[in-house]
Image (cartoon, rainbow, N blue to C red):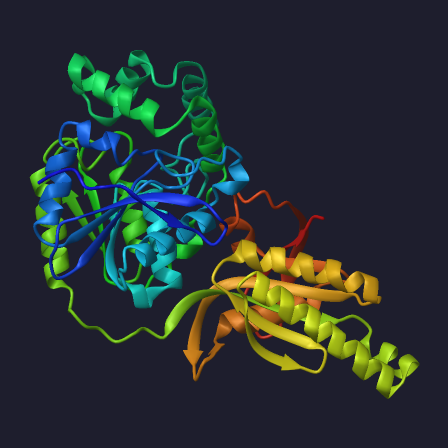
Length: 450
């Protein structure tokens, strides 16, 4: 089987994403790499061709390089590499490859991309397979499997000073494929792959983005069949971390494979192929579209609207509200928001990405300023229920309650939103803990910093 041709998909934000398609079969498998990749250079890695060609005997395999890596466009700014934008890469590639629905296989933080895509777009996902995934890089009291700041500093220092060298590749393999660091030919192939996958500046931008990721809120909202694959002796990804991730995803199954190698294309690739084959075979060819999805809800309303209406009079107020509606709808269209409801001077909209909702809210506030209109905005991301083309559920209630606490010209967001947009360049100020009427517990909120 020859190496497949490389094509390019265009994202909504204008980047070109390199992808390849190989094989045929009853299902599509989209492989999302972790960290860095190069879909051309990967074919020279020992073990990689066997893995991909093994997948291609049971289905059509779609490979791609994430933005910032390999043959895809490489923005070096960390705020261009956030998870939300990586989700756009998957959508663009699936559209370009005419894949309506697929099994998604994600490696490392690529697993979090696939999980976020599956949670927000379940109708396009037959099943989800996560290989050695991590939801957060940094260690925390409630996430003891992460890396300490000292370990992250050491990793970043090595990438900054030794990226692409034989010594850097050998050191990496001493952790990710114990024993292979002494195989000179293998080390050389990995060093070449690293150089082809990212420049020193690009890999440092990726490293900075990784520091701030915390995708745990996504896991609870995944509603597609899921398996988590983990090699029992993997020193780079703790088996307990994979077990925790599997426990957070409803109905997910943890499958421990033999070996200590971190990447799926190193070590016993046949075991990986069998696991994916068995998983794909277990999925029903047709399954009803789930009606529960991950969404970001946005609520706005005009500040002091009653007083403004009284002072302007009915005709002038009606004209102002119509101009307000025109601005809001224009920005919803620009940022791919969906208007759900309009009541008086307020809007309720949904987005498939929290950063886009925040950018939309900022754009609306900026456009309304010259009209002398101030709005308050609340944003929350959570699982919603699709009901007759609209959305409902506790996440919608939370979004409305957050908006009610916002001040004039203030965009107030929940902790979940703040965590999910890590790496997007957005900044926040702590707005303290609050009780939300009708919602259990106390909620920490944040205001978007201008």
